[in-house]
Image (cartoon, rainbow, N blue to C red; front, side):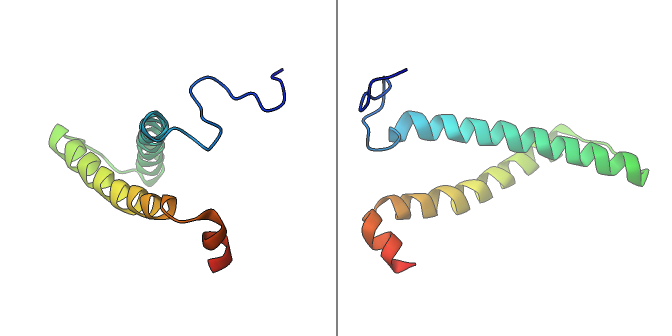
Length: 93
């Protein structure tokens, strides 16, 4: 058990360190989405009786498109929100 006020190594007590935490979160989200997408596709194909063929090109295209959408609609608003004063951001809502 940590003493009151003691912070774990690598943290500043003001939230997550931006570089490492963002990279770790991005890697985790990528793995989770990849695995969930693959499981959902196999589940749907199995129960619908579809014959599926996945080529390397279609997999790369799907990954690039999904990554672009995720980065655009995930990181962009998060960066905008990080620049706001927390009190003003809460007051806005």
